[in-house]
Image (cartoon, rainbow, N blue to C red; front, side, top):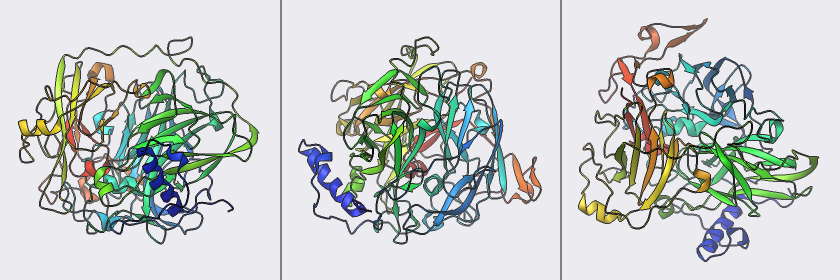
Length: 614
């Protein structure tokens, strides 16, 4: 292909680039021909030539009644390798294979989404760890699912609770009221104990909410690129087997069928293709980016270090575009970008890259920075010629500017930690030093404003996601973590541990980056810091539903040969009784969850229920 670059040579540049950054140089200036270093402790993908495949355009799905079906199929991840097993959300308009269609909805216009589980086995069944909380003996052959609309203001029975498992042959009805402004949400699996494997295998889709300002049409009041110039980008990283199939393992140190703690990939994917290329017209583009990886925070930038603009994040628009040359994006976060390709001449290219090193545990066994996602090639077409808007809020035909931070009436300390165990791997991730089965959960009151001080005693970043609510980031304060741990020794897991971080500061609080302003649902909590967020917990009257309502643990319908039936699902569904750890599969659930969005951590056991009480 002329000037193609192999996976190994891309990683060589990454190793040199990381060293260059440490010495104060730009990673993009790294010379070629560096020493090829590959750790024998980790699995490595085969050689993939980059830029062989066109960046896929994911299909769009509209309507007030939608059906999505989780299914096993096959997908071609790269031109030079055969199709291999994968999971997808299919619909009448999208046959599936990998990922799911982009759902487009409108603010305050409800959708009834029927979610069906039609999985017959699982491509990563051998990687399921049957010792994790909630796992059951038949999950390998009959994997459950639970669809979660990430960022949605959603009633508890439709939120995709990890214990509301939809088994093969079952379906669940989700009512999404969309009582929120235009935003980039995404939907993905949330099943207890196997979220990491279901999402990694392909159960991911975009979900765009529009309103009268951000219409998604050319000529919209905000003056933004739209239609063919607005492109959702699902970013992932993976390890592939020598045959080009998805590999759920990263290291030989952990036996097959055991939880690993977080795997960093060595190959970048965008919309399901390995290192694809997109031909772009000369003009402005809008990219809706989601970090859908299992474990990695990325520092995203273009290879020429050009300026681009962040115009929104998780829950909607910023007040005004923020010009950046790079920004950090953690798993679960979404960012709304404007990129100007006017100066990209025909045939010239620029790459979307990453230069953030992997977390320490991954680096210790030899994992290196995954440096590349995709390439953009200029063509002769004339694109969107409108400029970058001066403002996005506060002007004519715009929403009001973001309100000042509210004053909290409650301050709550929560902790992010890990303890060593006599197992392989020798760690368990926890929130508040508790496991998911605890009854000692947070109970904020409806209508109150709280400050959550999220104390991270680990050296690694953890993206923390709260279901239902949005929040604002107050700031991050470095901590004297060792002094904190000496003064407040961490007890055995299962005993709540939330000592105040006051008095253990190692410096002043650092304000959030300008591109982190606005309403968010996922926050990057850096290692050795306390991250403070301001959360308002809405009332039932404001929501139009009771956020503390109880709901049945069983899904709402069963698929039959002639469609779906409602009612009592215990007859013939195979979904009742008691799991291996004594947790009942019947009865009722209540509330929402908050968790780390490093999916391996979420599965064991960095996720807790919480309730928003009257």
